[in-house]
Amino acid sequence: MTSVVDFDPLGPAMMEDPYPVYAELQRKHPVFWQEQVRAWIITRYDDCRDILMDGESYVRDPRRISEPSKDASASVQTLAAENQTELRRLLIGSMHAQDLPQLGRNVRARIDEVFARVMSRPSFDWITEVAAPLAGGITAELLGVSEPDPRVFQAVAEGMALKFDEDLGEENSEAASKVQAAIDGFAVIIDEWLASDETHGTILTIKNKALELGVPLPVLKNSIGLLYSGSFTTIFGSSGNIGHTFIERPDVLEQLRDPGLLTTGVDELVRYHGPTWATGRVAMRPKEIRGMEIRPGDPLFVVVAAANRDPDQFPRPQEIVVDRTPNKHLGFGWGPRACIGSLFGHLALGELVHALHDAPPLRLTGAPVRLPTITVRSFGSLPVTFQS
Image 1 (cartoon, rainbow, N blue to C red):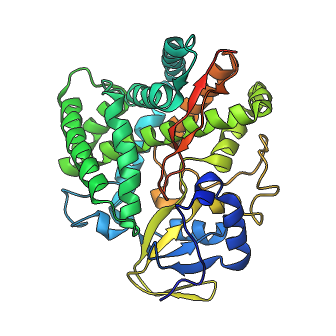
Image 2: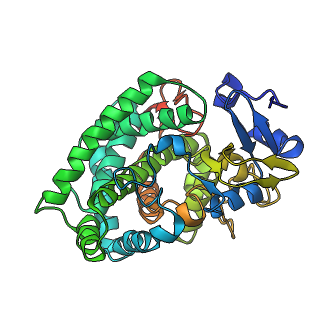
């Protein structure tokens, strides 16, 4: 197959603003084969949603899972749909069982602590000094575990984004080696959490119930790792994007002072500029999408960021509409493999908005630098200050 479109996902124009390109693709080439990525590029909302919903026909890239049937690599995201129901119900139930109002207060206290460290600085990096420690600390608070070094999880988040790119045709063996080392270190931390008497809340509930249900230990550990990494990555990426959005659009932050708009507003920010550009799937059976024949084994590049601005689904898609309802965005995924930690993500981002209301306005002190990946929409650096 040859590409029908000259599409460079890491080109300067795409890194700066991919949305005009996505809009043109939706109009002219909503489904096409891209040789560089070596995948079908899918940009319309209905197609992306249907692929994410159909866990039988489309699975996560098997190149990311050396032996998907073995416990050593299995998790709630890689198990077949019929085998993951009880585990997913356990994970979600354990989060809803927590005292969410108290968690919110704890999260706000952590945000205030991080802000206090940088408030008087003439310049600091929002990504490394705010987003990473907030994501690490908040996720640890939400899950009930001791807080690891946030630098470890920033490396994991960035490394995993590069590894996902590699799985979709962007080879980067150095990144793959780094992320594997980070993941191996994370496995040690998970062992410590499971053995610690101080572990409480969500992880303790998961541990106890998983043993009752007979969930194999490797599957339990992998699922905990996925839950932590998913929550961290969502909060980390969204914190950077939201911070930048509020710098460019302080009027949006002002609108969200209305408590009645906070929930819809956070959803809209995730739709408008969420942390996920795209996700990968592989066809397990012959399918047809908009007249294109998809063969078993074909990779698909599901462009979530494009779907979230599809005008057929979202009126005024290029605008931030803080009271948008309904807002069935795909920023936290969809279907059987949707982001399990979306509840925590909403809570954390809502508290971040509250904290920014109480702080002086953010402003840039230098040029932002995008993380050069095709699956994650985030910043590598965002120099800012609270000082006028």
